Image (tube, rainbow, N blue to C red; front, side, top):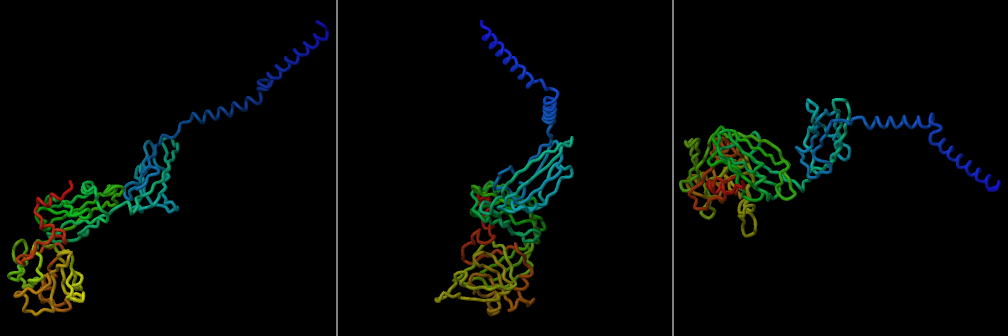
Length: 415
């Protein structure tokens, strides 16, 4: 090998060795500086990763993203393995909803009924026994009016009614899942009488016992319809308890043949009143009829119930009929009559289908039969009409389901 070739080889070897030395210096030659700083950061990260997360487990209902949520029962926050430290609930526009924590701070509920068709946001924070914090958030939308139904019921909460008053519920939407809705309605009485509900249509359900309610008993209606699907995609929103009292047992018997009405208490006659029922051309319905409304004075226009003359005007239009008590939806009343001769009462039937009692214009004469009967009657009392020659009133024309026998009534139940 020549000198020049040997020198070139040594030079290459020296360069290679220098490169190795340089590389070694970059990877570890300055370990007292750069490596110490990186190890410290990694240690802190490892320590944070190793630290335990909170054991508190928060649950918000309805679940995040839910729609058609209940306005009564759905909103709630609960925690296990910890206690709630804060819960906020707001509408989408930021309006706060007041709520309350349980005494042990493991649950929270709003204090008020929610609004329909509204989006709510819930944020909850909880701590476990070690003080570690957990968070949970959810948003849900309540059921809309178009996707919900309610039942308008009678009688009113706290009222006192007669022995014939059924519980009558009129739903604002057609119910196709009748069994589910009926299961959400319970009616009980302190008398212990069995109560059965009967569907007259997809929107009306009445409930009653086999015989009239026992006097002085208390009836309780419970509506547990919140979240019940009454039809596809349509949910109930009511959660309500109603109680009403049954008064004395008063049933009045109208005989169109004798033209007398006998008022009874527990079967004993307490007063006999001369009446004038429907004329031969306008007979009064027969059957058991329940008083549904009372008016000291009211207007009666024949045109509203089909009694018109050749010009299309009502055959009668009396603006101040005294002491009127409704018996049917179609316009049958027991009412005072001041325009007829006193001699007709007890002797001739002259009305357009109502039961007329002698009365005085102004409805203030306490000495009249109309005043007495009105004053001594309450909604829910029964009037039984016979010997008119007309058909029996339809059970759904007013609150008159008593004109169905018990077997027929029970056949209309959905459960």
